[in-house]
Amino acid sequence: TSCLGWLNWDDPDFQGRLANSNSRCQGQLEVHLRGLWRTVCRWSWGWSPDGREDASQASKVCQRLHCGEALVLAHFPLFSRPQNQIICHGHPGSFSNCSSSSSRARQCPPLGLVCLEPQMTTPPPTSPPPTTTPEPTAPPRLQLVAVPRGLRCAGMVEFYSGSLGGTISYEAQDRTQGLGDLICAALQCGSFLKHLPEAEAATAQDPGELWNRRLLPIRWKVQNASCASLEQCFRKTQPQEGGQALALVCSDFQPKVQSRLVGGSSVCEGTVEVRQGMQWAALCDSSSAKGMTRWEEVCREQQCGGVNSYHVLDAGEKTSRGLFCPQEKLSQCHELREKKAHCKRVFVTCQDPNPAGPAAGTVASIILALLLLAVLLVVCGPLAYKKLVKKFRQKKQRQWIGPTGMNQNMSFHRNHTATVRSQVENPPVSHVDNEYSQPPRNSHVSAYPALEGALHRSSTQPDNSSDSDYDLHGAQRL
Image (cartoon, rainbow, N blue to C red; front, side):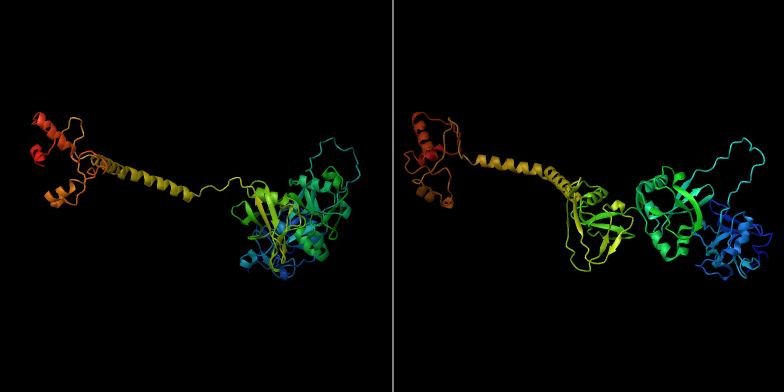
């Protein structure tokens, strides 16, 4: 423990300020000790970490800041930016026993304070006012405080005019589409989608918790729900903790619901699933989605074409679970509700802009087969060609045994009449058949026409030249 000072916040020398807000009358409480501005731990002086303290104890701080009475003394997440944090002990407001070295203090939420804005009063003029140009004032603006789910463009609406800011109280008759569209357009969040019921529930349960969620008290009321500008829409009111705080959802809320199709033959067909947090679950059929609008959104998200068909599947087991969207479009669902039984899934078929062609493996196999065929043709083609040519020539040579020209002297044929004798003279070749030795049986052609022609020519004129390998005298003896 290190002693940083001996002051109380009601001492005249105490220096304090409210930081991290748009107003000097509200923000994170900081005190000046030992030459540094330090934030005060919420757990100082034995206070409860989650409670709210008596704000009147810090009324001296509000007075030194020229603000009204102290309204709330608690931890405000919007103002939370700890720096040089200290945790103090003793009676509330005492800084004589404070520590800045404890690890617990570094993790402690800082203390915040909200004071009432001072009422602007103008004294009666004693002289004509000077003709000077008034200082420009900041235009009125709106701000959304996100709900616990952390959606962008969804939450409680805060209105700021000059240095005065707070949430807005509204009645049932103020729920108009025009006012919602004006607020969403001013926030650059598209168009009005719906009012949030969470603010009403929090108001009914615990006003203190609602303070911590919206951070500012109600200081405005809806004056004209059909207004054309923000200045005409709201009027000031006394700070209060009751009433319905204006909270809404605009069309550009983020993050949007993500969807996918599973169980089909491609990404463009299957049962619809939606994402809740880090998990996917089935999207149950809903009475609010009887047309094609919801499924057209699903198909567009999958980068597919239009909807070909959709049909509801049977619930199956009674314990089938899933999520359902109460809105017609998924783009309008800022929340998904759980259905623990009788969840009927929906099977959607979208137009596939890229129908499946041959698989990459099939194309690769075809290319490889063509390459192998080309290699085989290069390697084995010439050899196969030579074998075919040789076989063709051999077949052509077997068609004739002897000479076939007109001036040839001999053509050797045998028929059945010479078979017995050739078998006697040439026993080793008795079983050899000549394919040209069997003329038709009823033919009158001689069995040895070449020999007879040779004998006839030899009787008329001897010829010593012969184109045949056979001996003519041997043929005469035969």
